[in-house]
Image (cartoon, rainbow, N blue to C red; front, side, top):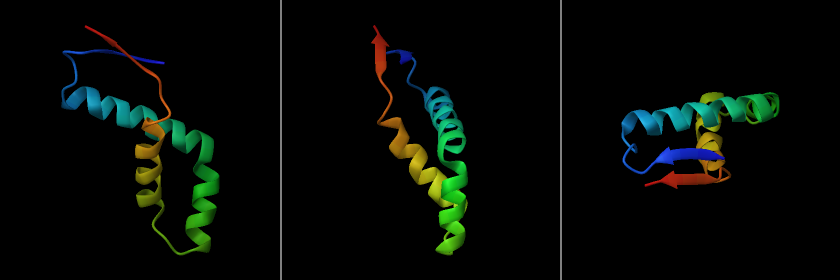
Amino acid sequence: MIYLNFSDLNGEAQERLLESSKRDVEQKFGDDIQNYAKEHCTNFETMIEEETLRNLYSYTYVFNI
């Protein structure tokens, strides 16, 4: 669960969420994505970024107003 202040949705907070999501993706699926990228000649970093954005939808957010 991610707790956010409604008034704290600036660029820094968004970057913090993206970095957290990226760490989660790399930890959970990093090896699988890397293998897929090698097999299909795609860019690993691009795939990680795409999965990072998709992963944000799996979080549960709680907004404090």
